[in-house]
Length: 80
Image 1: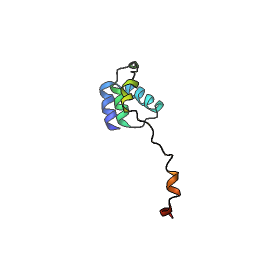
Image 2: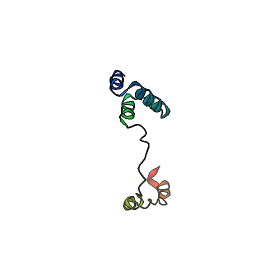
Image 3: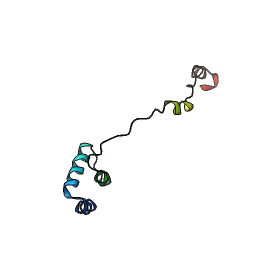
Image 4: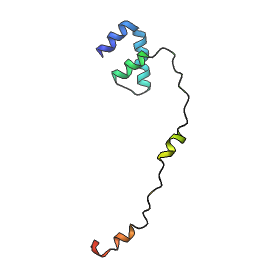
């Protein structure tokens, strides 16, 4: 927390207070998160547009394994 006070002496204590309030709203308690929030320019809430990753991830799609033959293991004579 000392590092946050040092940072606030350079950026302003009002900025520290806003960042702490935002961190509490986000349920984030880490000093590094508050430092990150302080490093963001005020009013920079613009988020990038989402990208479509379905076509990229489709190459990893695999069929589910078949498990219909596992019941045969239960009646196997050596399983007793």
